[in-house]
Image (cartoon, rainbow, N blue to C red):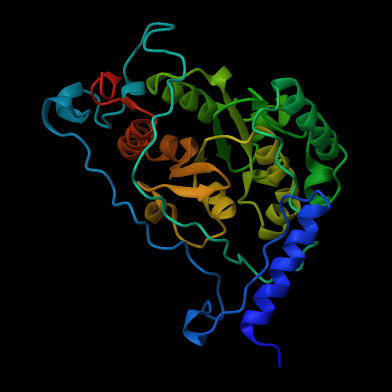
Length: 326
């Protein structure tokens, strides 16, 4: 019987062979472990490892954005207040490095649903131009337009909804799936939830044009039902291609479907908030979907806390109205 050390050596040799062929990323290969106790539990996937960084305490008192500071605004979210066009909008600030370690988001199996295993797309060089990234995205988009992998979705969709935004964006927003408005227009987040997302973007001192926005699914599920696991698996190749082409520094997962599918976990969204995970070189933060906020307005305050937590990592203190350290 081959020893674990010998298996590790063979796997390393295989990896080097793939790299020599020009394949920088390959599907996940499970490395044997010495102790049975280290193996993942049966009957379910591995959950993300406990985060090494503890949730940051949010400011209180006069600097908080609770109901006391905003009067009739019970959620405490600044997008509830009227604002002038262009007010509070600034260019994306330089990313400040953080010494806080990241939570591990090792892939976990969502279900035993059979699926075709495809090699992960090769990321473009960090110095790739916007034109090169846009070209890679255009090729992917044509693949989405022609996709028939999910017969129900392909037969009921009006338009595919690939993604929109800056191909060279540092920030990528990931949602669940298109709704009726998105299906009609072919662009993500253009309905009521999209209008709320625009307000959140403005409150975070960002512009929609400097963010890349896409969904886990590129076609609308009938009746806006929750995407099926098989559908998410079929679409994953396109999402991975978008991530490889854009290579963002930050990913914001909006809602349970986006967070669980990107991080490959069964953890509920409430337990994924207020911490960072790693996806490639990107730092991932998770929060509630804007459509959930339309049904449950008090949750807007929690989303605003998540936005402050995330933007603080980028060097912007939203609770103070200024860049941190300034």
